[in-house]
Image (tube, one colour):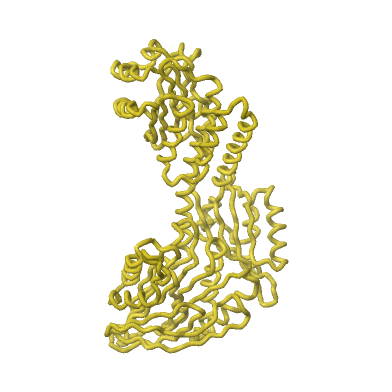
Length: 586
C-alpha cells in the first residue's frame, strides 16, 4: 500500500516522473532464465560438440560455434581464461577423474554470465586424457544471490555489535534470520515478516509483491486482529495501481518513502476519494514508511509500515525497516531460485533419458521414470533403447551409485560408451565387460553402476505379425532380476549373476538366453520399485512387484506408467528413491 503523500508531509516536492533517465538509473537489468547444457570434447581431434542448451547459455545460435576448444576459449572472459586453462591442463595431466571450474563468459552483445563447468575426464588404458564429457550451468543469479546474502549477514553482524544501543534491532533481525532459508510457501513467509513488523515497528503492516503489471497482496497484519479484515477491505475497495508514479519511483530508485508526520490534513491532501479518506481515517494514521523489497538488485515489492494513534516512526526505524525489506526480498529471490532449480534439474534429467522410445517392429515398449529427490537433485536411474544394425536392438536399464552432477556425468558416459561398444557383438556380457574397462580406466571414487543389458533381433516381414517368439540375450551387472509375466498370468524371475561395473578391474558376468512368447511381457526395474515402503515402513519387495505385474501386466504402451501407479498406491507415499521401469512385450 502506498499513500501518495502531500508535499508538506514530506517536507519536499513529490517524487519526479520515473520515466526520466535519473529515475531509471536504479532499475535492474533484464533477467536471464537459468539454463543447463551438455557437451563433449574429443582432445585428439580438438572437436567440441555442444547441445542447444550450451549454445543458449553462450547466447549463440547452435550453428555459429566453430566446434573447437580454441573457439570456446575465445568466449571466456579475458580475466578468467588463463586461470581456467591452467586448471584444466593440470587436471588432464594428473590422474584426476573430473574437472570443475566457475568462470565468466562474454556474450555477443558484450555482457557477461557466470558459468559452472562440470566434466568427466575420459582416459585411454595408458591413463592419457582423450576426452571430456560434461555439462555447463548458468550460475549468474546464484552468484548474485550469494553476494546479497553475504551483505545481509554482514548487516546483521553490524547490528549485533551495537546490541546495547539497539537491542530491539538485534532481536528483530535474529527472529527474521529464517527468511534466508528457502521458503516453500512464499506468502506464509511474508506474512511472518508482517507479523514480525507489527510486534516491533508499527501497528499496521502490509507486504505487496509487484510484477507482470499486477499487485499481489501477500500479507496483512495489525496489532488489533479485528482491524485486519478492515485493512483487507480498504485494499480490495481501493486497489493499488502498479503503474502509480510514486510506487514506480520507489521501485526504480530502491529508496524508502518516509513520512514522519501524517495528520488528518495530510490525509485529505493525499487521498482524493472521500470514501477512501473515511475508511483510512478509522486507522488514525499518524506516521508511515514504505520500503522496497529488493531481489537480485531489482524492486519486486513493497512493505508498508503504519504507526497509528499519535505514535511516530522514528528515523532509526527506517534503517531497521529497510533491512527487514532486504530480508523479505531475499526470501522472494530464494523462492524463485528454488523453482528454477527444480526446473533446471528436470531439464537435465530429461537429457539423461531418451526423449521417446523408438518404434521396434514386432514388440511393444513402455517406460516410466520418477525422481525420488523432490526435483532438487539429479537422479541416478536411467534407461535407453538403441539399434546397432538393421535389425539388432539393445535395451539397457541401470542405476548409478549416488545422485547429483557426478552421477549425471557417469550416466551420460555410460550411455555414450554403450553405443560405441555394442555394434560388433551380440553378447551383452561382453559389452558390459568392455564398459567396465572404460569405467575402470580412471578412479571413480566409489562410483559404480548396476544394470541389465539385453539384445535381440527384431522380427522382420511376416515374423513381425506372426505368433513366433522372440529370443533375447541378457546379462545383469549386479542389478535386481528382471521379471517375465507369461501370457497365462504366471510371473517368474530371470536370474543372471554378475558384478556391478566400474569398481573392480575384472568382473564376473554371464549372458543367458530368454524366449519371449507371444503375449509375454518382460519388466526391467530399479530398486526404487522394490524398496518403496508401505504405511508400516515395510519394503514392498520383489514379491509385491511380481504380484503387481501379474495383476496389471496386460501389455500396452502405457504399461510402465500403470505399474508405477500401482507401486505408489501400495506404498501410499512418494518414493524416497528414484524409480525406473521399462517393459518389453511380444
